[in-house]
Image (cartoon, rainbow, N blue to C red; front, side):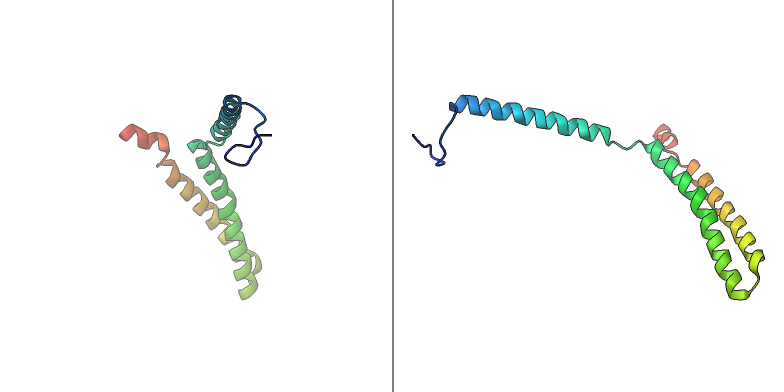
Length: 110
């Protein structure tokens, strides 16, 4: 059989191979574009994740800190409860802070 310049045995005429390659490349590019369109992050979803994180992390961090201080000083429920409420306060404070800077308000000012 005849070999081309790449030392490959051509199985199809050159035009048919290029068309086949173009068709496969187009399919892969469309699949990649569809995959990227699905993974686009909604800014409102990011804000919702921040709110949930602050609602969970603030009280949990305060409770852990209060428990640690209570075990250190021997005043078991007092500092735990105090730091738990401070954690709730800090969580809500952060939620109020990010609610003032939402993406929809920033786009209205421009």
